[in-house]
Length: 99
Image (cartoon, rainbow, N blue to C red; front, top):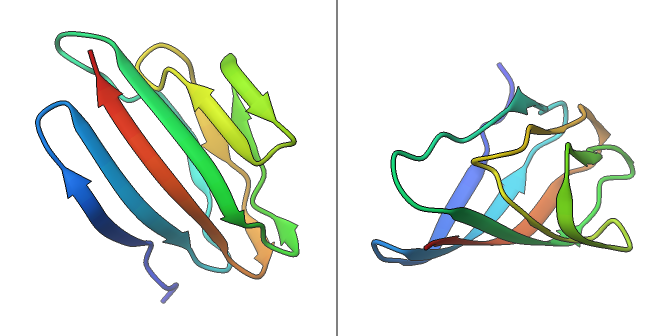
């Protein structure tokens, strides 16, 4: 059995949340959209640790992509995914905002 994603809640409210997320070796995130019933959904992710191989973030349209480590995107509008982590782990600081 593969290790599970560790999602540590740093702060959470109705409109804003912050998480420290660790994706283990061999994990991947399939291409998807995060539906939202009402409002606009923004995600701001900072990759703190890149895996040695794999774990590449893809987004149909990013608002900001700095050095492949800092992303601002709309998960409610655009498909996004992460390739399989082949070696190591991927750790990120993730902020979510609903307007």
